[in-house]
Length: 340
Ligand code: NAD
Ligand code: DAU
Image (cartoon, rainbow, N blue to C red; front, side, top):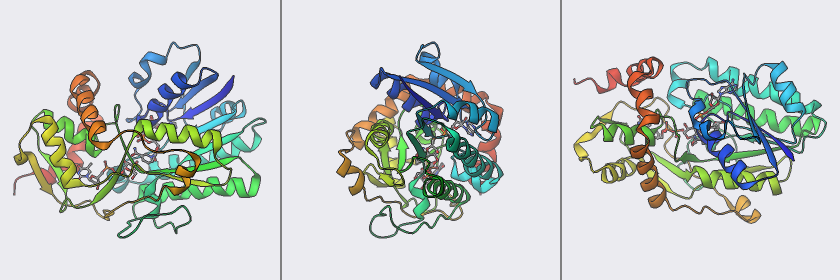
């Protein structure tokens, strides 16, 4: 059996990856390490909590004792755990530096001592390249992160690389573009706009709405990560991009079409400070390993809307009775959405 440690496995991509891994690899035993922050939801893993090939540990990646115990017995570490929301990093960056940088450092120190570790997958992000007005980012491009979240991820990305270059830790770095799909926390634009539309609430579109994101279905991301575990080269970086560059305004219109709601729900609001205009990834390197996205954006978005329609039990308690979310929402949107 291959011992696979998934950090952040109760979050959006992590929980999709845990499900994918257990379904795809009968010879993997998966341990999820997750602190269960506001974004970590045990219900994301409810159907695998009793699986004999899966165990769940609640803990902090920055806790050297827990990280050491779990990393040292692992063959593969897939490190998703992070603070992930750009708007929250603008409200305050301390948790981002603590988890994304210091937490990653603690895991890497543990990885140095792990006797049979074959792979440490550092989940980075396309945001490390900064705003890309023309062309597409290649893995060798300069990193120019422009918000505190992206900067903390760039720090972790280069720290992981340094532990390969200096200490020989078997690190591969993945830089995915914007993921979408089931179990995404409703602070991110797609689930926020779907669930607001279903409730006939305004969709707060930042600035002129012409910012571009490259959408990647979470299952295509999981397949790419699996391939990197299998065939990646240590010390290398792999972009994972969906090839679906969409302006936010067009995305919003599609969501309104799919939810059968009127354009009058679009609420242009004050922009995000330092809002990156566009991300775009060159995925030649990953495609050479044999990966290509399988889920067309139109299908993936329709199915995602359908998932949120069918799973109100999952998001409604977060949006309607979770005090932490409500306080975040008020801080982020209260003034933006107030009629002038
Ligand atoms: P998420 O916010 O949904 O989940 C993050 C998970 O990490 C949560 O379960 C949370 O409880 C856990 N966590 C946070 N701090 C922790 C700590 N100190 N110790 C242990 N667990 C902790 O995030 P996501 O969207 O699933 O993103 C996963 C990873 O992928 C992150 O590293 C993120 O930077 C990266 N990424 C995300 C996207 C995207 O579009 N969502 C794109 C590119 C890269
Ligand atoms: O690109 C990868 C990154 O994608 C990941 O590394 C991050 O973890 C993930 O959160 C995501 O970051 P973004 O900032 O791109 O995602 P978000 O869903 O917050 O915003 C997507 C776009 O939508 C962005 O241009 C801002 C805009 N937006 C977002 C929100 C929440 C709005 O117009 N209104 C909103 O209310």
